[in-house]
Length: 79
Image (cartoon, rainbow, N blue to C red):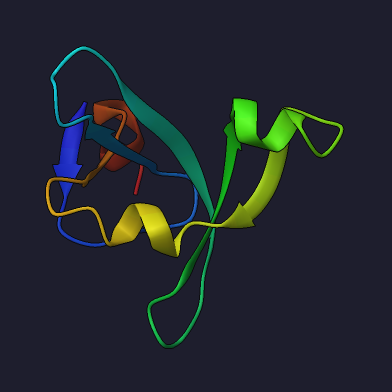
C-alpha cells in the first residue's frame, strides 16, 4: 500500500479507533469539487437500515484526525 495526500476515487480511507483495538476501512467512490467524499463500506450501523454494505457520505471519516488515504502500490504504477 502507498499513502495518498488526498482522496481519489477507488482509494481506501482508513482510521484506527481511539483504543487501538480496531478501526474502519472504506473505499472512496466519489470526490466532489468541494472535497466531500462518498464511501462504500460495511457497518453494523448500515445494517440497521436493511443492508450492511452501502454507499454513503464519508465526510465523517474524513474528519477523523488520524484518517489516511491509501491505494495499492501497483495502482500507482499503472497511472
